[in-house]
Length: 262
Image (cartoon, rainbow, N blue to C red; front, side, top):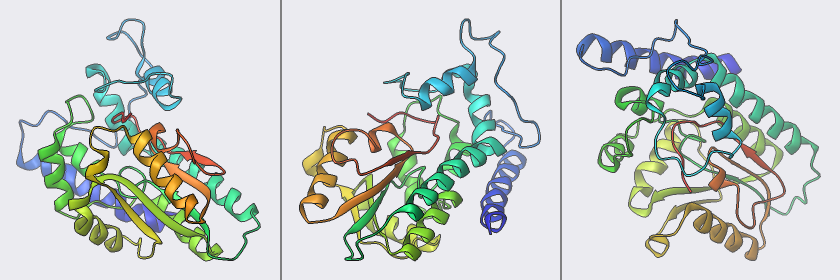
């Protein structure tokens, strides 16, 4: 089943990359799946290897960064499109499933699991494969155009966790940093890739304008618990998905060296 989920994901990315390279020869962000790079050499970045940089990012020791270091774009691209990202995500999903299976649920419909969306439930790798792997500042216009296409694939490991949770009787709540005006396209995209059922889909409203993701997501989780829900699990790609208050009984961090959200 795992391979069946992965194949459409890889096929989509491979097709996108080969089409992009053949139709636009001046594109500089070319990542070749069959030529992985370890990123262990630091000759071009004094005192820093790209592997070490990614470790610092994933452990939340490196914070507040705006873009991927220029010299690490190739490494990040190879990591995200290569086998290691899949393996790292699989470890997270497997641990989350083992944890969920170990629980004794109340059976009253109040046990929920919180999912982030971007780089957790939906993958934006086709967007980054076209526009570069995190070395340029965030471009809201281009990214919103991508979101409105409703073509983001699922992250296979998260979809597997989602299906297992539903089979166990756990309800799913999505809390996303996407604005309210993207609710329709987000709903359609989730359903198209297999996320067909949820208890709530919470978008970031205007009342949170200027607020950090930690404040926004903590506040929304607090509202859920006030309504009697029990957050038994919480999964996201950013530390801001998992920090703050009302984080749930256990959190699970997916890898993401593409961007940082506070």
